[in-house]
Length: 429
Image (cartoon, rainbow, N blue to C red; front, side, top):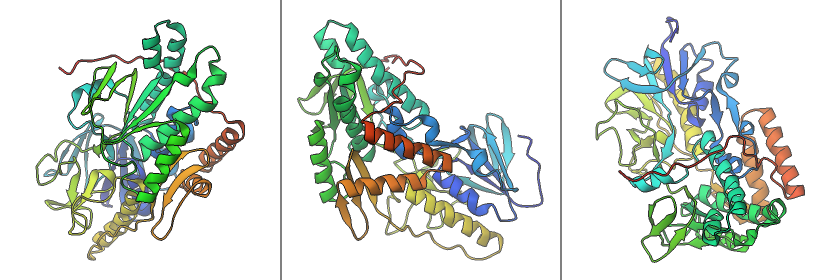
């Protein structure tokens, strides 16, 4: 990797997401050598991916170069690499660009889509965890309407304009709301010779309510917002199969659709080499103690979505969201300083700052520790918080200007098919 060995301890961070970047910033003033590895050269603001996939934002407005984030830190080095395996007994990482020794290793590799072993859905559905996937989804959505114009087969046309979103967490709810607003405000102008009223947005939830991690009040209000936008919400309905054309469920509900979007779950993006049952949980997260430390390897740590902090109070870990990742990154940075100074580590304590989701224009729900509110004020709070956590002044300005323009003009001008995307249907062999 062409990284010089110094007299300072080498701390290697795998992953440039919220957790990894937060940790690197804290370590910037310490007498350590920090090496950050990621398969992308940018930090991706995942909460706004759905806006890229629906033409509300361009991808470069929610991405920021990792090298630019940390360019002023003299002890920092970045390598564009895909980590293949960890050899914890040898303090070595194997990557596609070479091997690397470490003194301390922090795994902040984030999460990936969880299909729960259903290969037909994995093969034929669309996911939205990365910027390339969001761009693929944007292209597919737009191409569906272009194809719907060309076919005289009514059943095929309806399938092209029928969207099924599985999973009614924040991602599914926000995506459903965005698609409903496109149907209402944009499609009639873009496709005047197509009866876009036939377009259907279906949100499928296996449980008895949407936004189950939020309050009952937020769940009910979000459901009302979706209903007002014309979204079909199917509760207590579990998708069992999708062959690329037909969605079957555990009930008699069947959908004919060209687009199934899977937002029903995530799992930890673990790295080969930590495969033992006592290290990896059922949700593919690395089991760590209250210091975010692996029990069998005191110089290995895991933070963010990939980490499952097992304590009496949190047997299943913390939520796989940005806030726990940011807080864990900052806390581990201070703990690594204490470790190098020979001081005892301090346990990580998550400070829950609440949860929020937007359903559309002037429609959002916010749950804070002491307050809960919905509607237009919640929508402005949602916008402010997301702007605040974007990295880079340019990104904040671009997103803000886009949102103001879209709000005034009822438009989403990034509905561009930059690179056509065609699904290749697969069997579940």
